Image 1 (cartoon, rainbow, N blue to C red):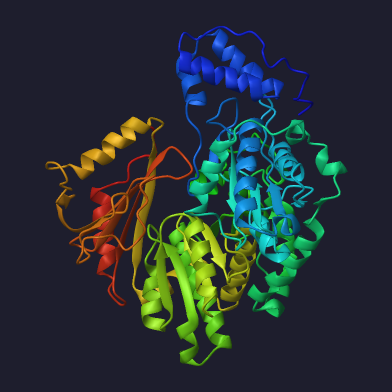
Image 2 (cartoon, rainbow, N blue to C red; image 1 turned 90 degrees about the vertical axis):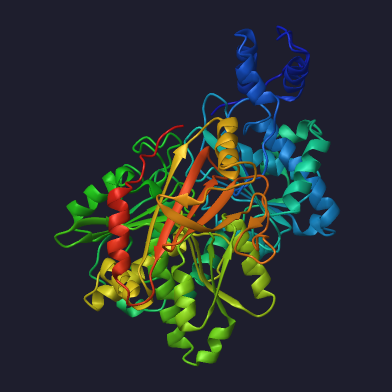
Length: 608
């Protein structure tokens, strides 16, 4: 993106906004920022008198959500840019130096995806180098990947190298305008409370960049404390991936063809290697989408969770190549979408909940083959976020292993995996409904690379039994009970409107009174983890941790439907999740669900 630093006059003249507080923020920004592109953005906004935009950019800061810091790239303290990444890393260093006595020995891992924005000069690679520069300027060893990697490679490297922490520069599947700063703790899981709050406090205590070294990208080339872990980590990851491969001989002769799209992100090379590790021929790449492109030129949205509308090129190629299975990883390869061509019935794009039913069944099926003693199940766990399908709970109830729910976000799953491992337990599968899956416990993070290879092997095994993925899904439902779910969202870029919506729900029939019916059905239980209220508990307190920084309310209806409304931790969305569960052998759920769907069609995904 060319040179973005220059010899800048920190006291350059600019026009007053007429607002003393805003003038102070403008002065701070122009004093500290050495990226001439983001300085020019801000100066242009001041000259144009865009006070509303300036206040949004300068009068608030980012906070850690379900996936770290995430925001649009560009000038301002509330955005992702050189200055805010330097400030964040200074805060991270300060916290680590107090918490981790051997930080100067263990160091930190830094990785990045393929994002970039020409107008602000904020590529993920540059931001990763600045992250490394701040740490190197304090004599902290940095394991900086020399090229883009999947997000799960960073937490994997943190554990493998014994690092104190890890940082991944990515905005995953967000729009092209966004980027992010994802922090992993020494256990390989994303940071959670109290670390997130303490790091934010440390950031705010020292906002001014320490020295010119913090802006020096060249430090990563000249400093002996910087190492490149790429070769070692990739080799170790692929070696350990074999622990998830159960039928290599069958894979080698598999007649199925697979198509893979990496959505213009990092996944192409790594999924190809994972397939080879499992004994498969490499999947057929979608040529228009296999190479990195920060503009995501061939998709309207870089999120494979959106389904057939963004998988069009993949499905067309699969039909041309007579491939039965389409696999799509999101731009940072931590999520996986799957579609199957059912003979005579067109393409079936599986939801995250449906894929979890298949993968959960597959992982326990193979685990049971190796551990026939039912007593061994007492140390086995599966995990899911609370807004995800309850299908794993149905598995656990019948098969005798343990199932637990967490709050939304894989950081909660990752930290729970760590806690369970300390007491000798094994998590063999975990998921969140937004197509985030973890097979085994290779890394305490969702992983689209390993999941792609596991899905391919499962499809090959079922094909050998004359079964499709979709047929096996219905077999699972017949054994464990049908689980019919629907999820969607609306976009809302106005936080006060979101606040009003949830306030209305919490004060529906007067202050502190929630709705009593929904769609003509009685609401029998309400759980509000924002306030800590749960009507189903004797003490009316939620078992799940209280999260006041976001909204999430769950309604249990008399007919068995569970519905949750929550705000996204990564995007300006209000999401809803509904599921209807039946007991094994009860097919009436299908009639009820179809009746409900026909009378209550899901709203289009739209803006509020």
